[in-house]
Length: 86
Image 1 (cartoon, rainbow, N blue to C red):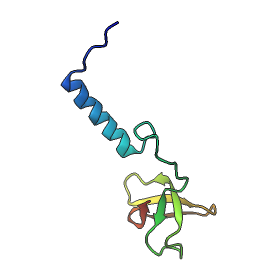
Image 2: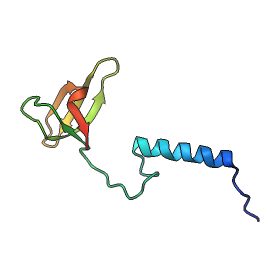
Image 3: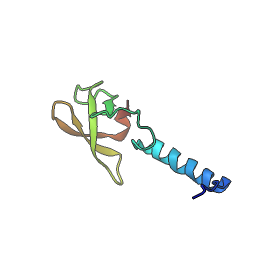
Image 4: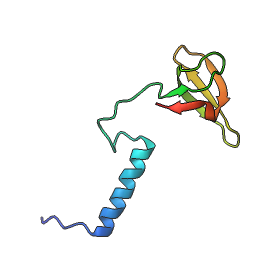
């Protein structure tokens, strides 16, 4: 069976899909990427926990609040702008 050459349009769409997967953080797009269990850090001095790593559990739909969980198990609701991705 002969392998057919991919058209430029198919290559273009493949690049778009691969870029989207990379932006979403899929391991399929970049297998070398290591998984971080707590991929965010608290950037503001909220609750005296500035600089601590956290995980977003539940993003707010219509508000700017998110529920986060810290490495020690403590959970809080903070402003979305207070966290940064590592």
